[in-house]
Amino acid sequence: MGAIAGVIRGDGRNVEPTLLHDMASTLPLSGSDPAQLWHDGPAGLVGASPTSIHHQSVGQEAEITICFDGRLDNREPLLDLLGESGRALHAAPDSYIALALFVRLGERFLHELVGDFALAIWQQRERRLLCARSATGWKPLLWTLNGTAFAFATEPRGLMAGLSDPPALNQGLLGEILSARFVSRTETPWQEIFRLAPGGALSFDRGGVRTWRWYEETYEDLSRLSDHEHVERFNTLFDQALIACLRSDRPVAAHLSGGLDSSAIMCRATELYRAGRIDRPPGAISARYPGEPHDETYWSELVEQHLGISARVIPDSAHDLDASRSWCADTLLFPMRPNSLGPTLSACRLMQQLDERVLLTGEGGDDWMNGSHAHWPDLFLSGQIGSLLREGFPQGLDRSFAGNARRVLAQGIGPIVSAGRRRRAVWPFVDPAAPLPPWIRPDWAGQVGLAERWHAESHGDDLPGFAQKRRSAALAPAHRELIFDPIHASVARHGVELRHPFHDLRLVRFFMGASGGMLLRDGQRKHLLREAMRNTLPEPIRTRRDKAGFAAPVIDAVAQYFDQRPATELLAARMGWVDGAVVGRLFDEHRAWRSSGLAGPAPNPFLTGIWACVAVDIWLENAFKLRA
Image (cartoon, rainbow, N blue to C red; front, side, top):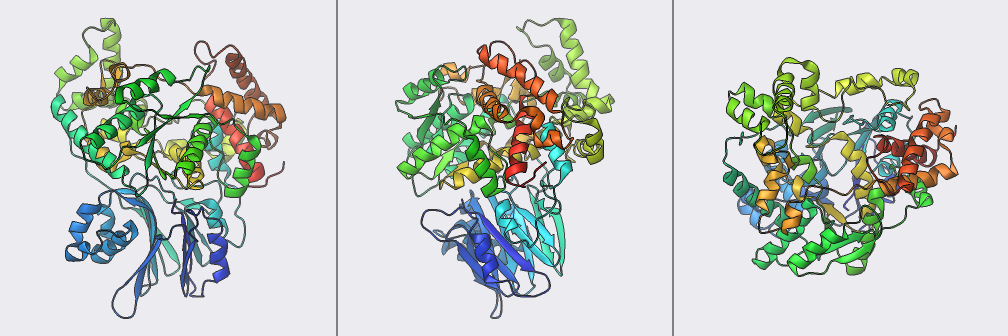
């Protein structure tokens, strides 16, 4: 919602005002407020929000200027840290507080911030630019060094406006996308254009760029806390995250699907309001799909009855291929997934009518609380054999002793002695030894080095224990940016900001150290959330085991596209990157499954990859202007 961009001339030449106007024209603006432009000789910054850009004098001869997109969720501790000067900033925008902290602490100020942000700080005297992203990385930041000019932006269109020549295609990254195995944290679909990694920073001075990871943390081991202590600490942090995400000068909405995560947010936020801890509860928005297998009306109505509220019901918006083409051409972003596009657009249109500007989501519940058995090797290595055996041989479940024994050996001992099992235990997204997807041409995969890419990114962060390595993959997975960057950019064009309470950094620190047995217990995922939400959630939802699948909107959109352009005519097929006949055959199985009412399991596991082939085709033709 507060998109930013900028250009720094490393050779000292002045930035042209027309260039800044070109970059500003690409930004999504909030309401009637004009874009903010600032320049000082070789530096120029633009922002979409009236508070995006702020200056502070340092001495009599120089200023420091911040360009800020995002929010700070721990304002009070930050103001306390500023001491006497913090009192004057009590009602100030977040960008003012961030800049004051930088002046006080230097680059160390990043370690004090909790929230979602991307920022750039220009130091006039030093002629130095600092850029950084928050640890959880929901606000993107792209950059490039084009000759002696450094440019950055939160959206690709803004960055391109600052370049004199269009960059070339990055086929290696497109290979990751087409394979549905996206792992690169710093590459983009264009050569020589990069993204700053979540928790990353860079500096540009003396004509050179230096990047580093500012967010490095040692997480507290909480595995020996009791069940009750886990629940108490989670509830405290969850309330803190909700209160922070509900901060707004306008009414806030919350997506209510009827699933465990979104229901927990809506129910607990309502309790906070009724306890007098927040000024107003979020208004529930619920998408309904009458007659479809993914309709969750029954579950969302349970929440309404439980709370005594009425959700604002929105219909799904049909996928519009021409709108997706225009989106790619206008923003240079990939098209949104059809299962996200419809309800997101419908919610934003309603919120525009009601003058609501913040939408809470349940995103992150699966990432952090589904759990895994990655902590089993940790139990073994720390001598907690009894705990391992209790988890591996649960009472009351209909499993054979031999089956449980094999599972304990494979998942508890296997990662310790086997490099392959160790890799799979700590890196859930890509196994570099897995077969190449059947639609990817092997010769092209070799040319762009797909296997090497996957192997390079499949080792996990340098953290103690198997569980923390595994969980760190959820902190900011690369594929999340491919999925959510278009969603966040789309809602920003409606004047809406998405917020994700389960990704609050203080909660993340707790999840990183929590007991694995509190997340996954006796085959039940999200055990911690279920225990914490006793007497808060309707009991049928708290104990719910199933979850709606949203394959139908994707299948319908792909069918519509292939009716216009057969899979064999995809640009990637004509370029020799994918086998269009294989893509078509695999999709025909899904088309037949859809016609049968989606009865039984999916015919093959490749729907995400099939949609990736369509999304890349739309992007290549409309954003990159590629013609085969």
